[in-house]
Image (cartoon, rainbow, N blue to C red):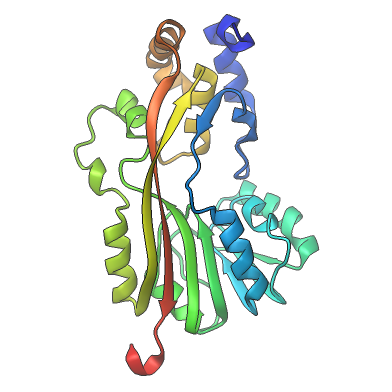
Length: 260
């Protein structure tokens, strides 16, 4: 029996509700939740592309953790972030490595010149502004990204919000392909994987929903306390809450101007 199974609902929820959710580091969940990783190894592939690039842009960099994991960065490197706590965290982490971190409002235009980068990366972007991605890429430049796919962790969403019949079309890779191609990019790699996730205690659920804020918009412990207590009792009786995560990898090249 683990410490988590012997602690009370109130203890688990209070701890998870108080801990910082800044940045994009999920290490607080170690031992409390597990998520199967995609087979393609995004971090490794991203690092290889960064090492060969001349000028790169990392979109929605979070706290800069993923970008900072690359051993070699290009001579010119920039990153964007919209959430103020993450912006400050990313600046502290990435500035010593020569990365310029820029505040960009969600949905706002990118404050960079046309064809400024030969590589644009993003791990789990909030949304894809394909025309802007294409604009800041030079001809022949690459966009490389791992993204949340359709119906990802829909089990936990439906537990709190009820049935989501349109979930299979959420963030579908086929839509990403069509939108990228419409913006003048050629998709050269597109892969989707369905992966296993489990939450081993109610604190893990609370932390996850506080951090990944688009799963249950406006989530607070106070609003969902009765439902959280029911889920805590379910986990105690039946074991970890099971869910399916979906991820897709997309790589797209900007077409030369003559072929656009």
